[in-house]
Length: 265
Image (tube, rainbow, N blue to C red):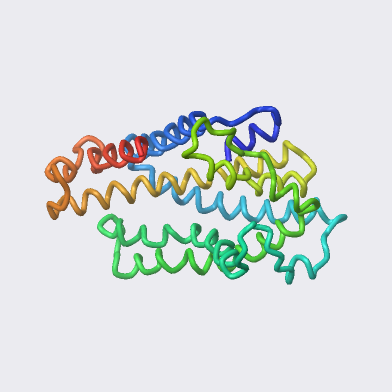
């Protein structure tokens, strides 16, 4: 998302994989640092992110609908068109691919189970943590999807957008990825809907920050999972990963292990 914003402003910029990897590692360790040095602020940070996510989604939906009001596509195209533009020969498989993206939004529903030892009244609150995202997702995903569809002016540009597209690889191992990767369609939709690079960049930046909040939560969950299985001696050197830092009040070793493995893999 960050590199897609750069590409939107500088169309001649060609993203290299090492650019992407460095930003990826930087964000991972920034999330880890927040978990380590701001562990006591994580609950407040998560509450802030909840309100920011609601605000971002609402503002984006309204902005797209208002800015694109003079060039809405036909309702039949928005609500009933099923053209397969993926390149996959099977319509059924293309449908499975299309709905699999939505699953990503609900991958965090199990976080409550991994953090149940740090949640007050877990018997009551953990099920809420697991179920409420599903309910909220059902309520918010539909209007957001409709607004994105209504904002599209040129579908071909959305499908083939260069925003976030990786440059050509230097070896045959990446050939399939080069053919498959087509940039980030969402920022192209924002740009077509608003007609403004600045507006599209702001909307995408807010969206990216919300995703960073998910990354912070993933780091928390991963460290607690490693800590929990290490207490059962399920990993090599479990005695090291099960330690809880007296200074930071969290499993520091498990957090660093998780970040290291993610960075090198």
